[in-house]
Image (cartoon, one colour):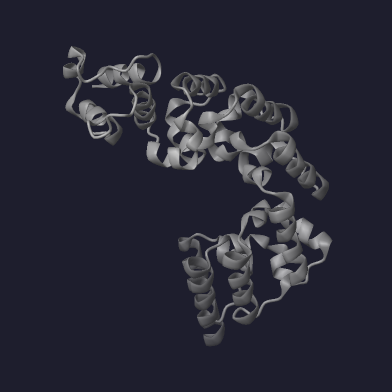
Length: 306
């Protein structure tokens, strides 16, 4: 089965031409492999005007695990891109350590990569990872899998300006940034990063305090003001009735689910009558949290009895 799948993949994606259904070799394929070919709507007789080359391209994407319909919708330029061009991009990414099993996710999230120019689009990104962020070649795969959007981001217009802004704020471990929070590098400075910092300042934190918070928890730059910040800050101030000092010390508060973590644990702590630091309440595992509550109640009971 693997040998046949490999041969099919090779015929579709690595060397033209595609085996047409009229070829005797087609009968040697497994039923599943035949189904991939003949059941694809672009290969049926209902689409007589679609060229064999275009069918090859679509089937190549499908066998790579890429939703061809979605890819074409998000990147119409795929209609006119040659299969050879797509092959070249795949081979280039593999030369950078990207594995074939990574391609469905990468191309699925960013089908624009399939029509990129290797010299002017992709090469500069890998040079940026290497020279500006200090990412060694063998870790390219880790970074790209974390954030495929890097491959469709302009180095001069997006990546370098974002890095410059983060550097001015005080970010220093750029390799760590690439591994853990590369999404910050593809975030627009004016429309995304600066507004999030200003939001924290508007809450009552000083600029220095707000900067310190995002340095400790870079994910703060990625949260939605409407869907994350506003409901959580409202619950924090109105229901938990805590002060901003705790958020300054534990900005990771915004990273926890309001409905699944913050509310139920706060209500349980409230019911127990215990005083538990915000960070302890949220960071503890379920088992640790339950033990904390049980131990606290036992201690309180013993002090009353004593």
